[in-house]
Image 1 (spheres, rainbow, N blue to C red):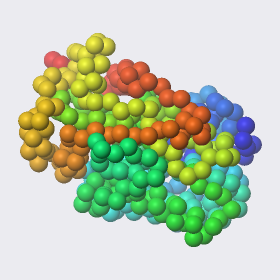
Image 2: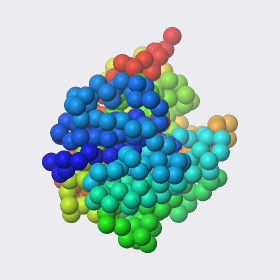
Image 3: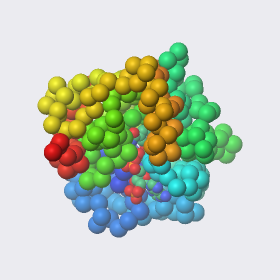
Length: 346
Ligand code: NDP
């Protein structure tokens, strides 16, 4: 074990963070998680094995100066996951960018004050690497998203600005602690709590008749349990440094639908019409203007392009091996059934 002091996990109530908390407790660590509401609202965290003796939950909001001082006090490691993950927000600046960027500054300032921090593990995203697939290019940790803005994919913009803020802070203030960023792609897998996070919501949408047909879309996926492990490995491995693109493999919408049908989930209103050819893509791009702004833009930017990602650094340096995405998808869907998120065709 790397430390006897508590490990601080911000946004402990979140889909990814809850798995990080679970993994830390399982490995014997003490954990101090930050939440926004009263701890009673998170029975799924309080019920985790080891939580009774080794989990402490403290309240903190990204937009409150000094909010994380108490949370990081006496810790050697901080895992900063808290950041709004939403699309189609009313005000991208106040709903996404401010909490992501100001929150990053707030947590970094608290880490400096604490004097005990050795490393901050920052949950960034593929969004900070690129906001669009490029069939001609293999994306690596060297790439930065330079396309997003408040008007174009503002969630991706918020993640890019937040990660840049973190690296700039380290470069200019030269604190005693270092920074390691984990940049996951679409994170799927079973949820410890009842809420449906944004990526699993997309799988739920595919199974709920939201899409008129199978589009020429593909995504990089990674299981949430592997993302949690990656954060721990980045904490435990002294040699870890820089950014880590955290992706198991990419999968096309056509293959996702085929897998779900062949795995017995055909009772749900999965799309059957193949719109993944040239004409279908043109149609989908035209129809995208009838969608909410960010969803429409996402379709126009992504349809017809292949995402290619290099995950060799994380495998080589952190020694991680990834769960096959097909297994992860099936478990995701079974978990959504368990929580009652899916409604079969009538
Ligand atoms: P969730 O929405 O499940 O979790 C987000 C967490 O951030 C919640 O704990 C939420 O608290 C907290 N949060 C949001 N706004 C604030 C705020 N103003 N003050 C304090 N806490 C706040 O998302 P995920 O678990 O999926 O995402 C976690 C991180 O991983 C994010 O940084 C996201 O960008 C990143 N990521 C996620 C991917 C995915 O596919 N899921 C892919 C790549 C990166 P509350 O519960 O109170 O709302």
